[in-house]
Length: 267
Image (cartoon, rainbow, N blue to C red; front, side):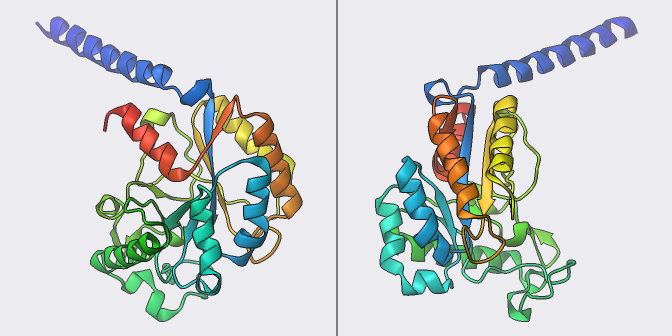
């Protein structure tokens, strides 16, 4: 009896493993692409309007702009931001005030009244809803994705990752856990936030994503200016490479790819 029970457990385990592997093998991206890449840009910066948008247009690529609603650029150049949506780019939610946890190392710049350590989960969700309404006024869309400011997922010591589905269809984090598409946590999708790197290094990241046959996401801030920046040259080298390898890599918005992953997984 004991031996039979052990054999049954082993068979069940093997069946589960086989099923998991089968899901990974069967997952495909559109048009035979080996992987997917999202180009995302945080904070609603002037360089996104003046440097990024023309570069994306040059290579026929679409990006996702995670906009902070109190951005001076968004307030001063609202029609240009609306124009990004008209051109097919995604305007996504990056909160109203960009709250982060001031108690963590290197976060002294966070203002006391935007300190996530003093927020509640309810306050975080309320702020995201306000930003969603603002963005709907810009592009007319109701569904919205979100990016965690500073990649911080705790408010007042409580995680709000699992609550994010109430206000966003998917959320982007900043971590290096590249996993098969069927294992991606759509409430905390991996991304790389490069600063002062070469185009060659950016392309190497894409190649690593292709090797893993999964989704990779860039989290850019300044491009050719502003802060936490990369050069225009490095950015353009990446875009040119992506355009030349469009048969291998599906470059699309964060909203489109996460919706696709969810649909393929049947969830």
